[in-house]
Image (tube, rainbow, N blue to C red):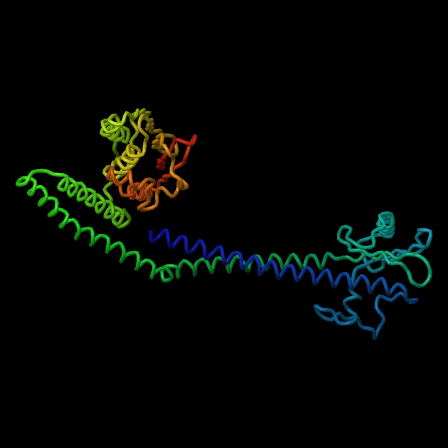
Length: 413
């Protein structure tokens, strides 16, 4: 239980840390991409406005662009930009093509790209590695298409993204190691409290067993002198019921404590299931319950035989109590390459009113009045669940056809 709690603590903490890192790195890269796009758009606008000037210099000396939200640009940024310009007259004919500021694009290619842009009638966007803007001249007629090479900015964004991912992954691993190291300290108060509770149940159980034995023996002695009556029978029945409850509470308390020192060995699970079903056959026949078994022969399992016998007895006892009169109980044992499955399917009228998973809650009883009469106390299925978990198995319940309860136990082979 402590190791399970520790794993859940580490898992939950790492989910929170992962979400935080994703938000942080995503925010940093989003802000960086928006900043680069803003600066690129601003640079394109200035290059297009510069085409309105007679000398067509990339940036007039002495004139600096205004401050931007993400920093101030200077003349060198514009002088070192790779771009080309294509001018059109009012009739859509090319009047000038300037590819002097880019070495990777020939004049014919630049004109083809500009004409394609003019046909799309798109004012701005991206084409390959270039970002473009279509600018209507204010002085005179015509249009200017400016293409700016943004491969450098894209490469910078990719480098920052990869660097942030690498740093984030390293930080995640460091936080994982730190969380594992600190998890024991974090759950120590809970672990100590659970240990005290388990110790209390164990001590109380041992203390209760002695007076129960005395009450039982004194009741039997009283019956020898005064004869049996309804009060003595009630005393013995309730004493036996309380004794069984104490034993099951001790079983739950010791299950994890002794799981590392269990004496396990291979035994015939088929034989155990056959013997257990035979032991309950008489109780079932008294209520006219028909039992059908599908037990695969020669199925062996490596575990503590007493534990598995207790598990099967709990399930059979539960089915005997809750199967309706004249009902049906089907017991099956199957084995595949990956798991061994024990399944008990019984009719029940009416079905429990809670979800199937709640049937395993401690002290839950679907019918308190009927369980009192039959000697139940709502802890048997919790014992079965604890035994199953010790052997890395799974137990679950489900409802079928509105009148059937199915309990399935799966153990890995």
